[in-house]
Image 1: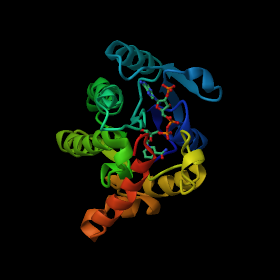
Image 2 (image 1 turned 30 degrees about the vertical axis):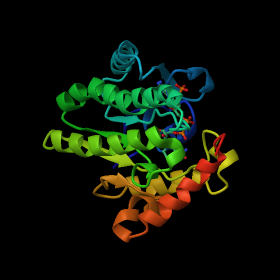
Image 3 (image 1 turned 45 degrees about the vertical axis):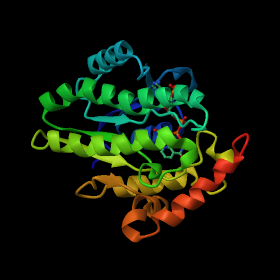
Amino acid sequence: MDISHRTVLVVGGTSGIGRGLARRFADAGSTVVVGGRDTSRVDDLETVTIDVTDPDSVLRARDSVLAGHPDLDLVVTMSGVMLLEDLRDPAHFAQAATTIDTNLLGTIRVLDAFTPHLIAQGHGDFLTVTSGIAFTPFPLMATYGASKAAVHAYSESLRAHLAGTGVGVTELVPPAVATAGQEQVNPNALPLDAFLDEVIGLLTRTPTPHEIVVERAQPLRWAERDGHYAELLEQRSQPLSTLPGR
Ligand SMILES: NC(=O)c1ccc[n+]([C@@H]2O[C@H](COP(=O)([O-])OP(=O)(O)OC[C@H]3O[C@@H](n4cnc5c(N)ncnc54)[C@H](OP(=O)(O)O)[C@@H]3O)[C@@H](O)[C@H]2O)c1
């Protein structure tokens, strides 16, 4: 995938991985707009306000971006929340609902909003975002994993639906990256710049891989195939003991 001559919208680009990726595209020469609920954090890129849980907000953002950038040809669905849950306490349902509304339905709202434009244009790409957790769960973030597994399955189907239209679908599968507070709780989280270096290396390969899986994400992505799923899942279940009452 070319990253230098694109017109890009990164929804969920107001912080973390999205913001870093947006910066890489801008530095490579692309025109970039970043979206999120809190655009006040960004002063070096064009922004658009968007709440992916609100259908009207998504359509307003779509109209505003396409009015200014009718040649938009890459949409990144980066928005996501990562919430811890205690499944023994039914009160976790609130986190589950927010997670599905943001990570899964939010992604679908954004994809739906821009699909007609990209098809009519006859070329372009979607970059969806899942996680290693989509493939090997981290039980403290149960619905998060479920939402990302769903986005993986959805991305595979979307690619099939868009075959022959000139619109591609690529899935980014990050491992733990040192953003969104991960740097405080997970000493193994990959530094953002190292992660982005690898992502750009993979993204710019020809043909563009269907999945962008950096080295650190490989064991999670392929745990089942490689026979270490049960062992990894057991390891990844240990942090449940940090929940109150365990
Ligand atoms: N960091 C990791 O270890 C890791 C690992 C695997 C996958 N991922 C995935 O990578 C993506 C980015 O994560 P990150 O680590 O960079 O986290 P982050 O810094 O918290 O970024 C999350 C982004 O999502 C946006 N967002 C959240 N709720 C939104 C909503 N309702 N509407 C619109 N935008 C919304 C936030 O913008 P506003 O707050 O401005 O709305 C922000 O730009 C997420 O999908 C995450 O699940 C992260």
